[in-house]
Image (tube, rainbow, N blue to C red):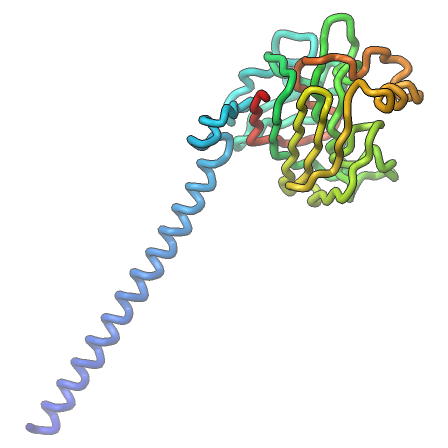
Length: 258
């Protein structure tokens, strides 16, 4: 066989192999890109949705990711312009406070497991309330115990331990609470079973307490709630979210009655 023919064969084999490697590489990159896109799409689908198992267990969404349905301002039949829905989040714009800003669920709850995700603006302050009553009461915190949400890291003033995230506000400080910086998502959970209440923050139990006990009544009567004699007495009521003049985002708000 002539040397020229051999060289042509070798060159042909080389370029054929190179072409095959290039095709495999492109296919691999395409699969990775498609896989990343699919993963991103799957992650988007998990926001403000319930799995088949969650539905079977009795979980219900309190926020559908698109509307303000199921929520209204405290002592009102509607929601003002202080709250909106953006990019799948229920957002407090920080325009109000107390009566004009806080929102509550249409429904009332007694014993339940409530889960939600939240992120807060730098230096922000907010909270989640339960067993909130409306009639004859001026604010959500006149009756409803509060799970505190605050930018522990960037808050402009020194916080008391009972003011930090995960606390039963002004009553029970959290233990082992670790909050993420402003602008990053945190997870919170409130479990109420009769008088027994548990707070979790980012998957860690941070507070446990009992409602309506001698210890509870002593804390209520210690001075903070002097102007609200019915604080923490209700056996059932609305869930509330606070607009305390700071921007805060909520998503994946779901509840299971116990």
